Length: 253
Image (cartoon, rainbow, N blue to C red):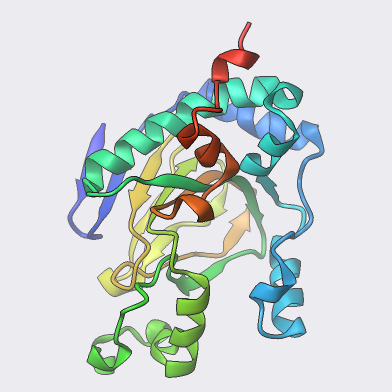
């Protein structure tokens, strides 16, 4: 079932995008593989050591960057890639169908993320147009919890860091937890209750700031991909596809 949601602009919800069996397999693989990574974002992307440590504390040991595993060779993670690559291709089709971009898009990051109490994420953007003029915004029309973003200092930092993640796709792998809803404060706190197998496609731009409400109990698992139009800021998978060096058939019996 496809829902083009009008309450949260630039948002598509697709229920039962993958099966419960596929969801369970990805969760079990994540927990049994020992691949939960230490925070690995490069230090130079943070202005201060305090910012870096805060981010590391937030993300450590609850992310699996599947696109980074590709660097080690798909054969090493054969079963994972056999399942995930077709899912990625289907997600890309949905992103293109919904947004109809007049440019090529490439996957920038594939990751499985685990959220648990007391994790949450404050309202933020995934993408900011480098030409965005913050002075054009009537700050009184912006929800209070989002106003920090429109400070000149903050907007400059976002322009430095978030100019390539144009679209976001998020696949929920489970729903047996409390809290953790994705919400859009600029759209009357509109929120989406997760369902296992549900795909959400949206543009995380300045008009679609979004956050994740605090997890109250249980574990929340998602498979998230960001999409860019800059090939050289994309994943190695996308680059190899563009160069015709990627062939999933090499790992399929």
